[in-house]
Length: 484
Image 1: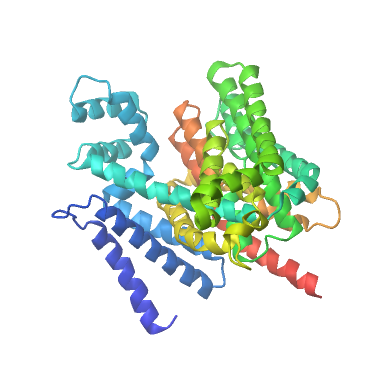
Image 2: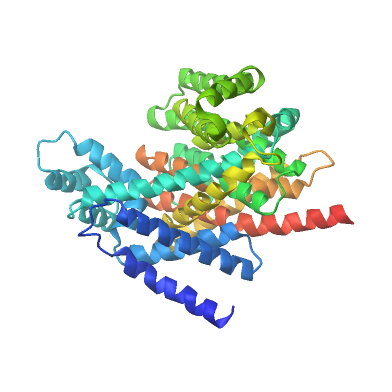
């Protein structure tokens, strides 16, 4: 790294915590801290990308690592914004539970955290300190605005991925994607259960082992999609197969979560809930197909009557938001809706509203390039590196990480000839935000204690971190073989 680049990078590292404490007193604009936060996150992302390129690694890996490093630094300095982002779910629950209490807010928060939560003492102290501090409401809103930028980033990323994959190709790979997704759920679930039941000490309840196995089943598409996109490899048949399998995987993961949660909480499996989840997922996919086949062209014309030449930019973005909302309403991940929105759109729908040779990607890519890095840096912010300090937790996390990776690789090994089996298996490895969702639900229903929650977080971290370099290396080999 050249000398002035080193000086710039380390200056930014020192500047980051300093500026994060800056006051916006005296300014009438309530969003000045938010402007500063996004500025610093983007600077961090650029720095992380630069370092990753210097070491010939995927840029997304640089964004994740710089997020982990800066998140840990700011968290150790008791930065309220980072603390609020890291414990957003717990804080939101506390606000909901204490909103109807007659006691003053500060007193209600302290009593609820002390008596109604099972959080570690140091976490309780941090949350109480943040929630009872002056200006908590503004801080909470700032954190939510920052997370909104993050959510838009991952939605735009999956939308862009959908644009580069045709629905006809996805349907053509339907049976193959389904088989890969099924094996990719079954293998990690069984292996995770066996490790939790027989190798991790302290797990005496079989239901806990079942839930731990379930947390390993689902795939997070965001990391893999970003690596494929950065490597200009979305048109590979393996890429399309992985993306299709990941969408199906999400539906299977929801069904498995419903089964396991019902088994753990009540000892019974609610078949009605499972049927409802499956029906909603199928109806959404039918809705997407019908929209593309029969409605989309007419809707674009109607929208264009009001929006004019802005239709080419506004319609794709509004469809992205609508599909993300719809998929979330029926219980699917919002990123599935964003991916489907990109899947159904084609440039020829907008001939009247665009310049020659202009594409939807040309308009959306710059927006995605701003928001997507925020998502990956903030994922790093939410990682608690102190989880690595407990040897028993670390060992259990490493064992489960191994079976989490092996389970997905096995799913790829059963593919027929013509596909790079290892590339497909690696593409299914990251757990990311999906694993975090499973872990948070397990903690909320009491099946995962603090140690097991930390174990799952380690699995999420490691599978997220190992995928970009492994996938990039395998893609290089695949492309090299194709050129021979």
